[in-house]
Image (cartoon, rainbow, N blue to C red):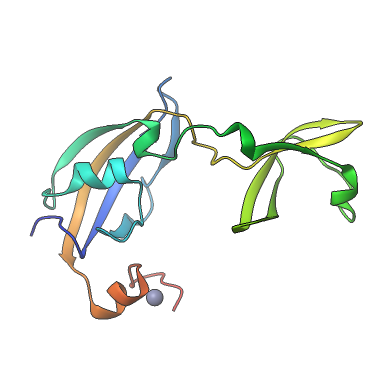
Length: 159
Ligand code: ZN
């Protein structure tokens, strides 16, 4: 069976950045499941997988436009320390959920200064060219429940 719209695929992958550093990998874990066409994974990776079958191995290069987008300067903001009442120690790299006009937005502390804290709301992989080494582990039809929920059910599922 080939990976196609509304099919479930399970993949093993290793993700490296342009410098060749491993950022993430499914090795030693369960393969990553996704429903093709349900925006479970970034478009550049999904598009490269369409038509593949179990056992296929491929290397996929994903540009930021097809990955996590370009870095948006407007998502980097300096805010007053008063926003962090109840937080004892604020340091670079800490992550918080912020209230944005479109809902909850994860932000990362990128600078701590006397006059404020600089937060970055970009995805940590924004602006990066991504290199995936992928092996397709399994392809199957999605169930009706999976399609209506927009995610894969199975081992380790939250239901
Ligand atoms: Zn569900």
